[in-house]
Amino acid sequence: MTTFVLLTVTGLGLGALYFLIASGLSLIYGLMGVLNFAHGAFLTVGAYGMWFTESKLGGVPIWPRFLIGAVAGIAVGTLFAALVEIVLIRPLYRRHIEQVLVTVGLGLATTALIVAIWGNDARPVPSPAWLGETTTFLGAHIPNDRFLLIVAAILVLAGLETFLQRTRYGLIIRAGVENRAMVTALGIDVRKAFTLVFAIGGAAAALAGVLGNVYFTTVDPNVGTSLLIFAFIVVVIGGLGSLRGTAIAAVVVGLVQQYANYYASSGLGDLSVVLLLALVLLARPRGLSGSFA
Amino acid sequence: MRRAAVPVGVLIVLALVPKFTVDVPWVFNDSLNAPGTLQLLALCLVFGGLAMSYDLLFGYTGLMSFGHALYFAVGVYLIAISLTKWHWSFAEGVAFAALVGIVLPLILGVVSLRVTGIAFAMVTLAFAQAGSILAYKNLYGWTGGEEGLGTDYTKLPAAFVGILNTKNLYWLALAYAAVVFVVVRWAVSSSPGHVWQAIRDNELRVQVLGLRPYGYKLLSFVLASFLATLGGIVYVLLIGGATTDVTTATFTLTLLIMVVIGGSGTRWGAFLGGVLYTWANQRLGDASSSHIVSSLPSFLRTPLEQPTFVLGVLFILVVFFLPGGLARTGRLRKALS
Image (cartoon, rainbow over all chains, first blue to last red; front, side, top):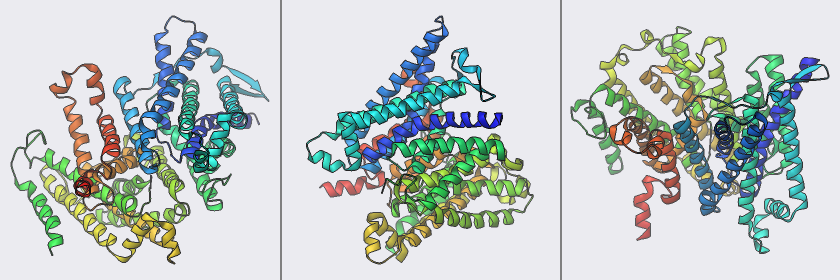
């Protein structure tokens, strides 16, 4: 039982990480029709932004150092994502294949640049000792960072839902996902929403990078690329463009991965996720929420 | 006959390369028929052929697959495993790899072609990722995990072993590129080939005309994957072993970059893209240790030391300023005037 609780909480934590990456991917795809291969790079940039800031704050006590690093990481990731949209994506408006290709090139080039500057080795990222300690929950000793991941993802989900449902820009984004041509015809500049969605997606991905630093305790140049593939699987299972579908799929994928790794055999978790994707697509070719054509 | 004149001419010139002892400064380190140069040229030819096989999917059928690396890796790994771990003969290994190179894409194609567009890209990516995970996990100690696996050279045909025989490997790579070129040309001008291009341009119209795109797409998928498996077999002979690099999603993305830089859906584009990319990747790596680069200030030098960075940026520039890739530059100029 205690093992099961530990696996479940860890699976939820992993699902939280997947959700943070996948939510941005899903929103960007839903609004702009662009599958963003540079999304992993946003995460890596955020993670390195945090590591770099922390490494410059050597003498500062760990909690402020950690928090300043986290804020800096998210800020850098957000800025990077917004710049990418303005400089690289916007000029290729309506040319979806080219937009995807540009993000592919950008993803590879960014990773290579980080390798060039800081090398291929994993760098330790210091975080407060409390996050590495365990809390006893239903008899299981669970590392505290799992709770941080889950709480962060729930807050982001709630924040995004509120933003999409309650604000004017949220309304424009929802309308744009539904029918972009009509929104444009009503005299609203959708392109501002494009930049906004990229910035939000970048911020969520950079947050995932910050939390990934806590979870993995190190950062390396390929962290974004390896997580991105699972985020893609989550987005497709959840149904592209649907935030709630993405959240459900992220939890399912995280749990399946953990259970299969423990109860079947180590390494089978990743394969079972792929199998899950194949099964979902065979049964429901449009993903769980069925909202994309 | 005239249509075949240029390709045959290029083939003859390329076939004669190992006979020339000429230095080509800047382009190659060594003389043209030195083993090092021939090895690089052979690698260029294999990737040229592989890029053409990918172009069959992407450029001619409009299927954006992100899992092409899987079928290449099937050729690479099955030869290495069957020879080194199972102690099969070379012929048995090739026959087995070729068989899997047809059956596997058939099974996976049936599943992944149920969806289209981006979802198809994702499913192929996921299947390739499964292959990559298997290679990394080193089940039964077959794949050698991250360290990779060398081929047992005593099982290989004697003509392909040793530095002196690099020219034979070069000719093998050339033969592979030529076979892919001929097969792709023949396939896209055949009757299903015309349907592929119609699917690429407008799948709905093909359906309205009463054809079922599914079977045609599957045919294209299996043929392209099989050609990639053959390329993997040539590659493993050339390199002498299998590494996990060839299984990764990044490897497929590299193929996509080759095809787009060269020009997708054109006769020579993908081949040129594959050759140039492989050459540039190698030479940029060499150039980064040259004294011209090392004398640059560090903010310029550091990025230039990473070929992937330079090629990634170059790729973005091609997408922006050279739509249609290198192969279409001539045509574009004609259209403008």
